Image (cartoon, one colour):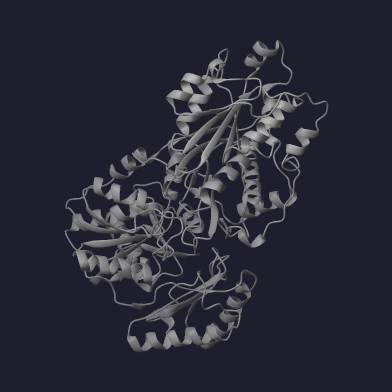
Length: 637
């Protein structure tokens, strides 16, 4: 079973008490306890315990929780689950949830002189919890000065912060860590998303994170912000994005947040925020969350939300494997690019009956072999070499959070993901003829042709997983896919993008038809097609540049089929279809870059279109040709 070891090397500090806000000893206990470790959890005694100790309720448990939560040194507040007993049960519960931390300290104030008189001693010895004494003091305080000093900021209901507006993309939030995103800004995002949920009467949410170096820190800030809005959190740890979607069904909640920047470089991070089962934010929802932050218009919650930790790994494996049957044993290359998928994909495929050869499956948030991006030729070259070296049947690469894939056949040929869209369309239309298939404008003409050949109805739509999912629902389509490697199965799955499920669906189809991937690929119409090319362009200029390119583009090729925002409302690019291929320019919703793809049915025409694309882009001095965000630029040489 998967275990979250992401806290190894860090120290957790736990303190407990009824916490009278006019008691300087309690204030100093909190402040000094935080200095002992990396994270501080405060167990606040409930009203029954307060009455037993003080004979009356000095301040209600809800009020004390809110006061303690407001202190800037406090990372998490836990209302005691005990009634008449000491806090042993609460301490044991927290210790179990955090058993993978390197060290746990239970800090005691100055009114406890030694562990001989502490009832928690046997429990601490059993869980190897270090006990500290004389932390803080016992002096009385006659004003709220210390409480105000320990408040990290204004009340969450009124605080406004400055935040880069460009991190609010059309369907998620992404930015550079330390520049666009830090703990304060992520806390505000948590407040805003919690407010967004509460206004829709949603009080529970699952939260997952990928392996990026900042994801652990941002998990704490996001959850703190959400719980302040009264959201009860189910923390599922380090997972693939599709496991967060699955957990929404598992725990029956519309709320869900995934901390990830997907295929962006290691210094980026971001958030995919759920608005329903398998559904994430679109432009209007992202705009609403941004507006809440800019106005400081947060929900006023009477209670702090709870936090519990759950592991959905085994349930997720079972849910995937019960849907498929493989009739042969495949030799499979798995290259995770040191991303999160290394924890899950090899094990899942072995359970499915595959012989798995692992490459770069050790998780490392620094991404030492390069950004895990299955659309990058450099990534797929590694997979191709491994397939040929090991005489494998197929090879797969994955992005950082596991919802996208890249594929290589047994001959070492890279099949860009529009070919996979065509393969899945063919397989599904054999069972559901005359159904609609949704795909994005970056896909090759081969997709449309295969759909027509198999008695389907092609529906081309705007790029973006959120837009494609919505269009699938609107059209009642059975499947949708993108060139980027997002695949959405609505025939026998939940309809969200799941790279692991896409992999086993490919293998199942090949085993059912008893064909190799190359045989299936060679049955399709032939196009010479570029990969998805990404070239840097400032966020504030990319839209204007694409609009300028579009005017010249359409003027240069009159009489051909044009697809732009006049055909697809809100589209972010312009595509021209010829009788023998296509060219598309668009600006990205994920970062400061533009995306290009082109194709033809012969090499001469392909080279002409390549030259046209490069010459067009060179007209703009704002284009950035060398940057971590650039992908497959060499395809224009």
